[in-house]
Figure 1: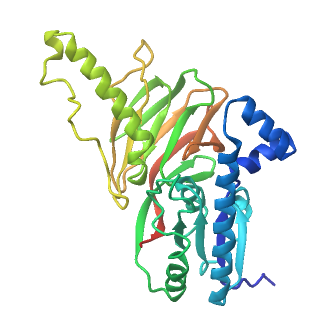
Figure 2: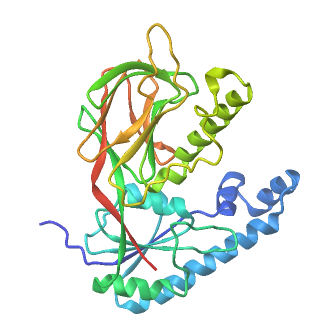
Figure 3: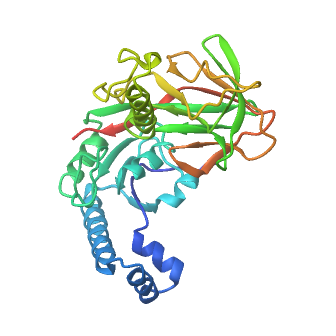
Length: 324
């Protein structure tokens, strides 16, 4: 007989920086010695941890009053945790914790809490410890508006798949060039680059924006040469608004990073939209160390070596982030 799971509140936390240093150096005193040797303020780390632990403790106590079991898990256990479809998820940490958590959910609402507004901007974090319990109570009743956030899916020809909240990077584990064939919009070409970035709307303000900053700077430099090939009409002005997609935009954006033209590689297909129902296909030409990782976490990856074919598309699954 299968196990019966009751709906619960799952509070997802993360390790503090000081906890990480304690693991590394065994004791707080050794961690303090290291930080002070590096001219860093140990008290800042202590204060950061104290604030975070206080928020987790207070929030857990308030959520326990909602007559549901509260499970507190560290983000390192997300890959093996069994979520119930009726669970309500509460993340306590920076935006990255929301991103890490969302990939392991299937439509459960996320109440994202900013534990330390003095230190964390929190673009994805509309709640604080005082407002989160009410949002969770409403989510339990099913009476809460949510952002429906588009995700990306990468699926290999061997059946393995992965989701991304912000973006995928398909390339080589090191800084050497990645080699692959890219097919999109009915065309294809062999490429050599530092990898292909595929971003969602939520990720369009992150890694994708850095590629635009680089392109703008290079084009501005070329325009300053006063070469007729780079007239003002051809130059991307700094005032050009950056590409930003709404969180619920069903499209994905791909950009080939540092594409290299050679006798065996081309650069005609280096950026574009992946429309709903459309795919981007990449076939590895790398005998080893090819990789696909999502949301900047290399440990969360798929091998992408010779023979592997990756199909990238908009995922059927969406993340549901509770609105304030």
